[in-house]
Image (cartoon, rainbow, N blue to C red; front, side, top):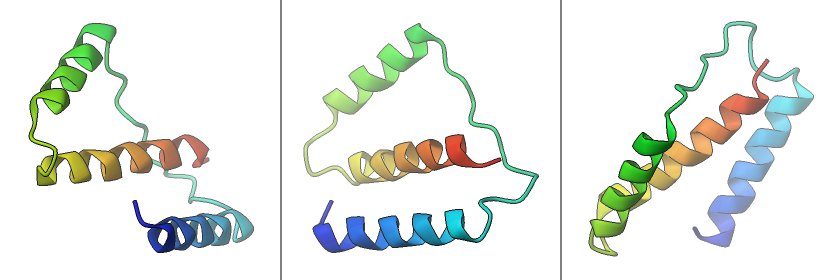
Length: 71
């Protein structure tokens, strides 16, 4: 990810935290079992390095991390 994009995400996240975080209706991330997580990792590893799905999955992972802070 480019430094500019990381800075933008950091600023946006800080703004959310300063305004009280998420609403009380935060979605909960789905919990995957270990076998599913290994299957996902293998499928990602099998993708070409320039696959758009790699980028989308990275965004999805960041979004899931953000949900953990939502209260």
